[in-house]
Length: 160
Image 1 (cartoon, rainbow, N blue to C red):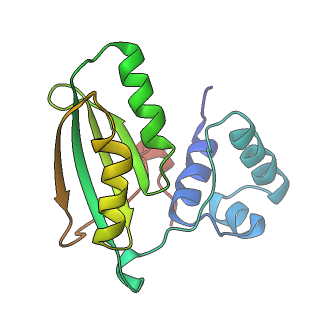
Image 2 (cartoon, rainbow, N blue to C red; image 1 turned 180 degrees about the vertical axis):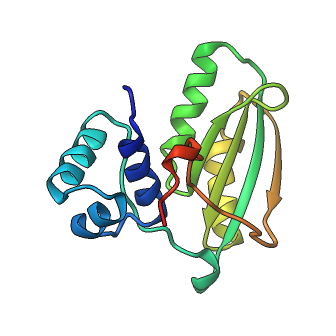
């Protein structure tokens, strides 16, 4: 799909604040509300906009641990990679699942309320799978930056 400067500007604005009303979005993009609405619907329908969510600040929640896991499998055939991936993404604590290369086969980002919840996740996902060869887990002690925005071309930067 070809994205023109107006599409890119709308995407940039929505990545910054998806709660903008259509009227406010159109005003900031310098377009009519009907045009903004039509374009955003097209971006959703074509899958450019995957979904709109509220991002929670884990530090504002009562408790929780962010764990980053490197997982290496014993057998790396496509069917084995697909099977582990399907099991990982089915686990609610797994927020992100990346197949990577070189190094481990997967990097997972998980959020759990406490250490017993992490141990339960590890038991379900890692220790019961005979194909998991190695796991390295890192626990976050500080989140210095979290920004899910995708950097768009400079022409998409909001105007003054």
